[in-house]
Amino acid sequence: EAQVTQNPRYLITVTGKKLTVTCSQNMNHEYMSWYRQDPGLGLRQIYYSMNVEVTDKGDVPEGYKVSRKEKRNFPLILESPSPNQTSLYFCASRWDRGHSPLHFGNGTRLTVT
Amino acid sequence: GENVEQHPSTLSVQEGDSAVIKCTYSDSASNYFPWYKQELGKRPQLIIDIRSNVGEKKDQRIAVTLNKTAKHFSLHITETQPEDSAVYFCAAKGGGADGLTFGKGTHLIIQP
Image 1 (cartoon, each protein chain N blue to C red):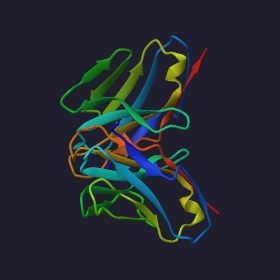
Image 2 (cartoon, helix red, strand yellow):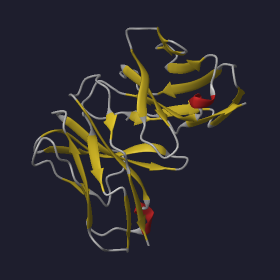
Image 3 (cartoon, chains in turn yellow, blue):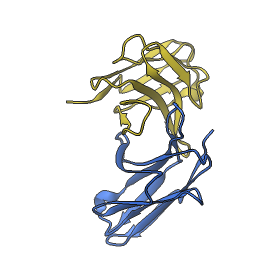
């Protein structure tokens, strides 16, 4: 089944403790991205990647890192999480930079205390 | 960059009536406008999209219209049903390599 898989689904952590949210897609998509969703603010892009070893900042990149060492994986790294990073995170992928549909993962609900 | 405004933030309609959600965008180079539906606790899923060379697109009870001159596009849902209750997001994509810019969402409530 074609899908975008995120792990974990839920994560509670403390301020300053490094964490990684994994994202993997099995559709051979070139383009992958991370969004955060907050009430009243919609979906805001954190980082995106057009292909292996190519990443770029989205609208809200501060406090986050990403890497794209393999085409299928695009992990989101929080080196020193803070409470304002408490949010619902979605990984997404699509074929290329064109107009193909964006496929979302099931989301990761992160709480930073 | 692109800025997308979406209205209303909440829309309550009687079952069987029509619902209209409106979005405006700022970048005249934007050329792709998808709509996503997000049910409670689930991921956003594409329901319909339109490209800038098309003025209207319809898929059963759902239609999208685009006015490039005014830089606005709308989602129309006819004969609404309880399963239409969800949060709907509009989005716009420019000609560059970056991602979609989303509106803040509309919570559609279908009253029985």
